[in-house]
Image (cartoon, rainbow, N blue to C red; front, side, top):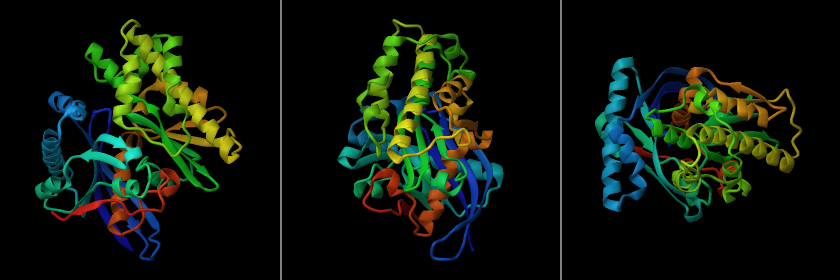
Length: 366
């Protein structure tokens, strides 16, 4: 049996902070390396300072030299954050698996950019670090995203579907031919950016959104964006969310409460429509016995979850435990790193559309 203690790192597009999860993964010693058990030990979200949030928000506008300097600086920041995390929890760690922070994601050109230099991170920690999990899949014609179905297959397979409400909402669904997964639309990245208009980090429980009402014209514009009509495999970058979706919702001719309310309805409707399209294509019979596990920061937004629950009927929405809500993506990166360490596939071609399964991730030995 091969047992690994891993710290997974995820930096989401909502810019709330650095998500860290310390986990153990135990695999069989057979060639197929079956996951026998896993355990979540501890997790933290280390908030970005206002300065770091601004630097990451403006990263898409930097020139090459400036972007690469940010890449190095962020890797050093990650190293310091994990070093402190290890000390606080007295964690015994074999290696770190870091997703980094996505700046650009352009599957049409087979390119993606995650910053947070793994070499700098490994130098700080003096231990192996694995990063760049998406690039090999994209080199083979895949979307390089979403990665979440890996966790859904290994850790949460009892659910018909898993919905992640992060900066971007994505979903994975079980079918006879394997998992189908894709990004749906922007979520927390839009909601949280709008809340900066009133100097708040987020809309707690969706209270302000609940107090508003639907703006029909805005909802129609959002639902008519061309990406939403594309079949999977497909994925979104932060640039799409900011340039296509957020731009619509920045219009202050409407109240903030109404814009937040409309965005939550939009996410709900698009989630429901996405599931129905897959069900029709794959000839799935949806039942009220089938459950959707909801995680990601948006799962704390009660109003958003209520809108989704209405839109996905007859399926039952189940909100994950607080630990899974907060750290599922960081746990996912730990799992992806453990599979990479064993030279096992960790990106699913049925999801991404790549020519074959890939063993994604570059190792920096520290």
